[in-house]
Structures are given as structure tokens and as C-alpha cells.
Image 1 (cartoon, rainbow, N blue to C red):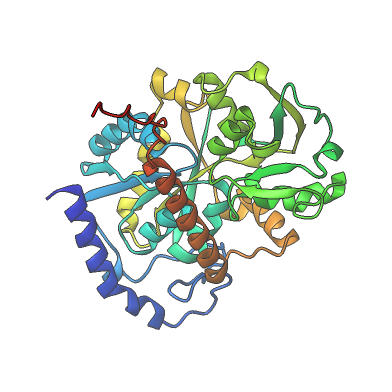
Image 2: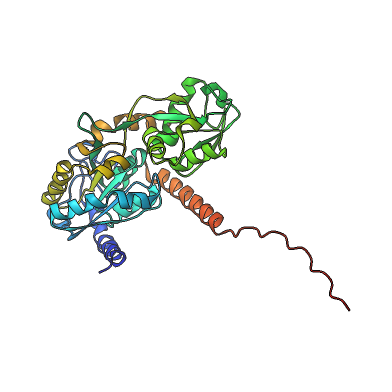
Length: 355
């Protein structure tokens, strides 16, 4: 069975089983969707009763589309080979083009394991039953990132106050570092997004960085880890960019399991993650990290939830639907621009034929 047919079959199976989840009595749900329960109050979905637990023979994995999805498909290939050998089940990579698509893939049962970007992790938890359990890191600590505000090195923007009246790229409405944290933190620094400067949504951290580098945007708040990786790959030259501000650290992308995997399988997958050490190429591509650190949504995502509370941006279905529409519209605009034929040079009129 091809990966495409496999994913379609998984979606059909889950669609049939899903209604039963919402019918089970639940003593506490918190911010979770009605399909899930949080009886132990750890903020993530509890495992369902044994009859509704899944034990797939093929494990489907996706990583956040914060940068080009094709890059990560290659970067995670050694890990998926390890996961296949470690679990005894085939592990495949599923490319997603938006945060919304990734969350929906886990919600619909097409995705068993995923690396979610910092902000969308909360949507995945509340709406898709994702259970974060790991963060990338090195021998000393798990990886964190800072929100950095960048501009061109030759720009006259040198302080946050200089953003007034400018065109500033935010990434997407649900992004912690690319939108929510700036809205929560910038007013105390003297600038309020949409009031003191014009917000333009770029659609991704890499697009914000490249847009600043090209002069399409005057400045942008982006995740420091993404920016540093782009510098390391030579996509942008560090000397061409100036950083005018940085935040305190936030957790980087989470790695999460679908809540309804059979507990023995979920435990095995977790152990496979923690036993793995990244090969040299993967370390280079993933910011020098070489392992996965244990993490919980309750503890490690507390700063992210605090930012969302500060800007009244709850991780609800209504907010998710708004962001999904934005991502679809942005993707449609990008595709239309890519398909736009280049304007051919004007053809001079033909010389008149002799009569």
C-alpha cells in the first residue's frame, strides 16, 4: 500500500471511530476539545479506553513546516530509520505545508507522531489530542529559542522605537515567536503591533528572514533558532542582518504522540526517542542538538500559555479556524505568484513587407 493510500485508509478508520470519543462521560476537560478528557488534570488528553486505542503497523511522522518541509524530510530520514528498527514498525515521513494541516492530520488520525512548532503545539494539544513528551537538546540542556527582532544591517532601524510607521513581518497568527509573543511583549517596549507599525503576515519564519534580507519588510520578529539555522546553511549572511532586540527564552518545537496510541507502543516510541543520538549531519542541520530531552506540556509550555493569555488569544477551535483560513489564503497567493508567467519582453512591430 502506498503512503497516500495508507493515509487515506487511516483517515476513514478514524472518522468512523471518532464520534464515540465525544460520548464518553468526562469528569474534567479543561481547554480540550469535547472529543477528549483530562481527568488527571495534566492539561493533555487522557488515553481512551482499550477498545479505542490504536496499534498501527506503520507510524506516520511529520515535522513543523516552519521552514521548507522538503528540508526536514531529508534531515529526519536517519531518525525514521532508527524508529523503524527500534519499534519494529515502518516509520514514514508525511510532509505538511501549514501548521493547520499538521494539526488536522493528527486530529483525523493520519498522524501518529509529530514535531509541532511552539505556538501550534497548544492547538495540537487542545484540538488534536497531541501529548508532547520531548524537546530537542544537547548534553547540557534542552533547546530553547528567543524572539529576535531583525532588520537589514544598513537600515536606519536601531531601536524598537524606530519600528513606528514601518512594515514589520509577523509570521502567522498562531505563531508564538512570530506573532503572539510580540503582541504580548512589545507594548511594554513602547511599540504596539497594528497601532505603531503595520503588520504583514509572511507565512513563515524563513519567509520573514528572507523578506527582511531582500528589503520586502523593514523588520521582523522571528525565532532565533530558525534564523541561526538559516545563517548556518548560508541562506542569509549574518553581516547583512542586525538584531535590535531579543526576548527571554521559550521552549522550541515539541515532539508529541497521538493520545490514543496503545500505551505499550507509546512508551516504546518515547524510549526510542530518548535513546537516539543525532548523526553529524542531523546535528548540523538542527542547530547543534544531538538528542531528545523529556518534556511535558504542563511545565514546559507554561510561558507560551501565559503569552496567549496576555493577548487574549485562546487556543480554541474558533481561533484555529481563523488561522486555517489565513494559511490557505496565503498558500493560494504563493502558488498563484509561482504560476504567474514572466512578462515577455515587448516584441517590436514587424517591418512592413514590400508590396
